[in-house]
View 1: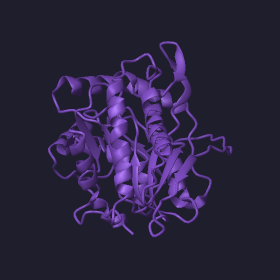
View 2: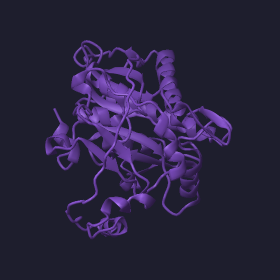
View 3: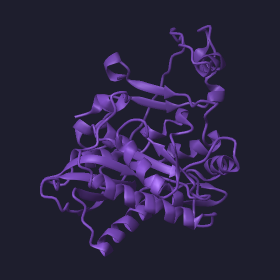
Length: 348
């Protein structure tokens, strides 16, 4: 969208109302290597010369002489009113040194072929990303960013579902593909590549992605990202009802979580998708626990095994993913977008 408008770079200012982690910790990632896909057709950043994320406390430098301030624009945005358009007198002059290298990072996939010859070529993909931040700047002397919740939990979930299917010998009508994708933290690169290069002879018809589902307290409510976008809503509602779980759409849509993990690679390719987490209602102890976890452990070395985990909630979540995957794979019809969905434009 920006390239045809003539943009050669971006300056992003995080919202002060929606800052998920402290600015001081988010800046640690600035020295981490960045990645893009080697295939030029999949490189969304070609031609980009500069990309800056700016501390909101310093951002009024950009608006000097414009007659506007960041606080004013944030208030307009919070009120849901249209933002004004105006020129910025400020100019940026920068010299950037870049070292480039090529690396390989694998997706890891396995497939359970469908039992129905008429539907075997259609695949339901269960995905979870296998990467995290790695080794980075130290926090309290610790440089290892473990990624226990983000996203060892997701990988463990799809491995558990795959093992259950193997042990049961059950083969649903459609094929099930289990894929642990790489480089989610670099912009969902592994899933973007996988969507464009699925296993030979398969057409992906649905995706269920698991990323940082946070089993921090009992699973009573299932938070479903993408609930209102496709007829997969009927499948997850049926599964949840059978497990006596309530369902909620994203209670914090302003965080844009549906477009911030690997399910969005599938969505952009026209594939209906769902992503789920352990849910909570606003202004409850559970909401406070989730918010505290995000502030203290998200993309921090403390996302390790030395943190409270509700193991029963994790097991209950695996049951959801298992039953949902089998149900979608056995559907008589392919999943489809709702006519009211913004994402229907990507449909095929």
